[in-house]
Length: 378
Image 1 (cartoon, rainbow, N blue to C red):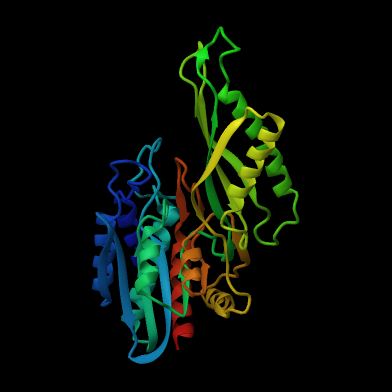
Image 2: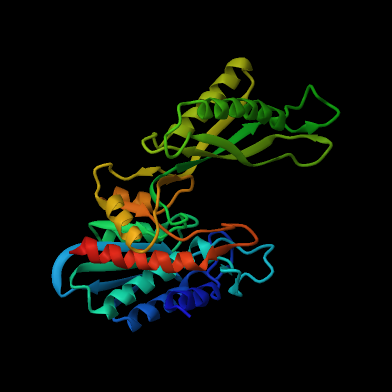
């Protein structure tokens, strides 16, 4: 069995569900130890650092004997939850696919980058520069791992091995989370003159939110990313059937394009609330920002995408340049001044109850990273 696939099976068999998403989940401690063990076995200089209790980053460094540029490979160790999965930590290979939670997102990418570093170390054909292998915590929630990483490590370029179907992702969307609360007045359900319905008032917000989404999606699309969008994520209110609800809370997500303001969603929602007040002076509602991350696009002048394309061709594939709808740690690395692209194996079922990665893609990804390191660092 190819070493990258053997490592991938080990990683999928380890529960690394993010405890910020699933309270009480195991987190990244066990999988970090396995990654650190593999890197040490390859002769890399390994540091394991907790970025929160029980939430470690692993950073392994391979130094060439001659000076050159620094290339970083980066991937996250955590996964989303496993509700509804029959055997999430049983890495079964079937019809050229390896199944299990995290198989595609993104333990396959982590296995490929660790295996690439080991091949470089053991081949005797790599002599220039430095390769950093960074396996980070918490990407599926707040990316505290990547935030910590960029405070201690720099590189001339980075590849995040998120799943891209072996295409080169040079851009991705951002997101902004907003909470909206509408206020009513509690009263007996038989006394409409005394009560005010906070849920019906939220309905006015939802109608305008739908109109906002239509406007966003009617704008001229970005060639790689399309348009921004907004959707209602969760909503709740009311106490019992026979009472007027005095409170309703909506949480929504706005997907953004690179360059959009960090407060775009909050300003849009505040404008909706102002329109509701203008229509009804008794309307009460407020909005607050919960969390957000900006979109990302690599500088068009960066040589990294072309260098990666040449390396991929040497490994037997012909990647396209694409944009990704999901957010990634590339935005954090990019904001820290590290030109970054995404390149990883293909598969399906991200965050679903049946997730798999194409086995051959993992090997191709690994081989591409080896070729890139040899070309870029020298």
